[in-house]
Length: 227
Image 1 (cartoon, rainbow, N blue to C red):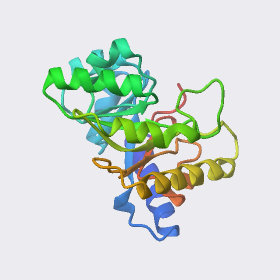
Image 2 (image 1 turned 180 degrees about the horizontal axis):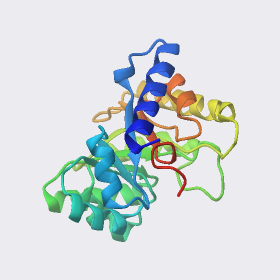
Image 3 (image 1 turned 60 degrees about the vertical axis):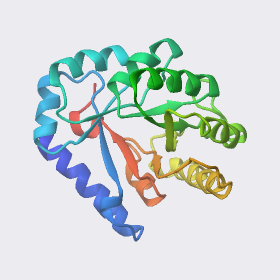
């Protein structure tokens, strides 16, 4: 299948999952993950309808954005080091991987220098895995409360990556927990906080994520094939 055919198949699967959950398919955004994908194939995906592109590394994204420009909206979905924050602020519309107050503060400072309000998500290590980035569930509310005080970032929601499994159903409890955590944070009525987005679900489990409330799924392999 071509990239365009794969993209359409993923969009159709998202729509079907949304309908099963009684949701409007338009409430779910497809983020096309372009990690290691060359610019020519990215152009093909954009031509087929990809509107949001996601990169894992600042350096790789910088090179691609230099070539492709504003063909689509760019998101950072990989971990961000504080010393790369100034570049991330210049390149990305949304940063999915804020997992500490120190990183949020650095992004805020760099956004202020750039004259920008940077949109971010809080990355939550929902399963408490040692090998994964993300703040733990128990301190996520505190991070949201403190980061919401910063003037040049806007917390838009939460992101997570559940433990890898061949069975997408194994991801369901983790997606449920992220949705529940969002509900807990919303009930805190934190000034300046708007949790509109739940970024969860990848090529192997995005349909389950949609059924559990994802507003954004991050899909690469199902569109471009194995890397």
